[in-house]
Amino acid sequence: MAWRPKAGEIPQQPGVYRFRDDKQRVLYVGKAKNLRSRLSNYFAPLSTLHERTRGMVLAAASVEWTVVGNDFEALQLEYTWIKEFDPPFNVQYKDDKSYPYLAITLGDPVPRVLVTRNHNIPNARYFGPYSRAWAIRDTVDVMLKAFPMRSCSDATYKRAQQTGRPCLLGDIGKCAAPCVGRVTPEEHKSIALDFASFMSGNDSRYITTITKRMKDAAAVQDYEAAARYRDQVGAMETALAKNAVVLNDGVDADLFGIAHDELAAAVQQFIVRGGRIRGVRGWVVDKELDVELPDLVESVLQNAYEDSVPPRDVFVPAVPADNPALERWLGELRGPGARVEVKVARRGDKAALAQTVSANAMNALILYKTRRSGDFVARSQALSDIQEALGMDEAPLRIECYDVSHLSGTNIVASMVVFEDGLPRKDQYRRFSIPESSDDTESLYQVLSRRLAYLKQPERDPLADALDESEGAESRRKKFAYPPQLLIVDGGQPQVAAAQRALDGAGVSGIQLAGIAKRLEEIWLPGADFPVILPRNSDALFLIQRIRDEAHRFAISYQRQRRRNDIQSVLAEIPGLGPSRVRELLKHFGSVARLRAADEQAIAEVRGIGPALASTVVERLKQ
Image (tube, rainbow, N blue to C red; front, side, top):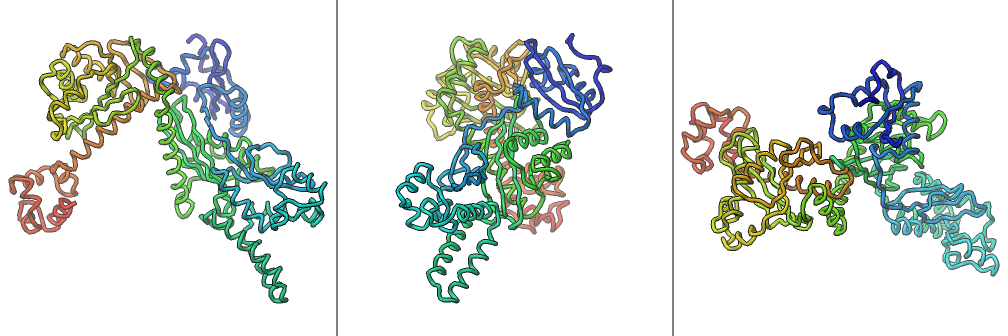
């Protein structure tokens, strides 16, 4: 790379750097406490770089940097440049939802409360965002009984002024009817301010105040006013019941949960004000580079507070490395001299709620993957892109993927998953037991040899050991009469070479072979010196990754099942029971069945097994 700067040319001060391509497009923006130290990581030998980082460096044609005074200034400049240049290798946010807010237009002479997705109303006070529009509308409908302020449109309000007749809400007590002069604009604005204060978390104060008014009215036998206050208290309690109390009344905080894999991350934000969940927001992040969780948290917070004010406490799953600078930046968003603390919830109610947020994030990531894989257009595009990237004559309508799993060389198993038209065919999944093998490549060769032999000689069934015996031989033959167009193995060049050896040995042709390397997400073809790199956000890579993950899951589940059924593995997990004692137990009883049927006294008679260890063995074998 001729454009690579010399190490002595790069300053050692804090700063922000930008990688550009040959067209001067900004590819990536980053910050560093020490620019020389950080940039030297990008110019390490290419073989040592993560594949995504390597792709960014190879696509770049220049790098430039700007020195700043401290970490805080670096954070501010990085945020500004990311928003200005939208670099493709920085974290990309995909929020396909427009969230509803509750807005109170306090800047208007006669304020109005409304549910809106427009976050740019001048001088309005916003609450939310909320995950469901109907839920906040129900809350507003209830709250108007306690705070009867205007909720009608401007046209309805002007019509009521002209006719001198209020709308239905004024007649049923859900509006103080300033349009016809029942209250003055100043009195109505006071109601709106109380409404906003209540929504900000000052719940108990209003309930206590109105309850006292109700009792005072009842004491002087003003039962009509007492009933009105009673209805207001009931309305506020109903509204509060919609938001379960999760923390102390004085807690204002945002809690973030992040679930991520190699390609994407799902973010969930719970907005807690006055100890209650006032809003929920979620979005998806595309990961172009190998971003670790602490760095991802920093990017998430920058995005979350782009157009909103953070609370005093922000709880995250991991604290960024330059957390002091991040806290200072968030504090300035709150106002001069304000402080924001970014931390991890370790114990108590906050930790329990943080677990709930993380669970929601995991569910959101699963839902995102499921919806993306279930999209017919996306699946068709993925298959077409795979065909083009791998140089196939036709789209791979049937794809088989294989993975090997073992525990320190024991209980070696393999899995085969089948996808047709981009969707899993679970009725054609198969599991393989491998008696002996020297390594993963040998295991993969054995499995594929068995599978490919069946394609070569359909009259015999070498998969019988792996198939469900309840199925008939004719049914099994029909399911495997259709060979795959694409065969994927979990691994890189060694695994692809082993699979190619099995294909050559079986004399099977017309099947495209590929391997996907873990974490690097690169596609290897037989005999290739360099991998095929699919775009990080492409549906093709998403589909291949999903097939690989499904094969891995299926192999792991079978391997765990084998371990549970393997008496030696079960006994080896008992503390104090080493290999020699396990052999002595099996030799003494002669069979697994007799060992399982033995009581504590019989097991304790075995050499080297005492009463305490015998009790542990019996308890474990009964699980």
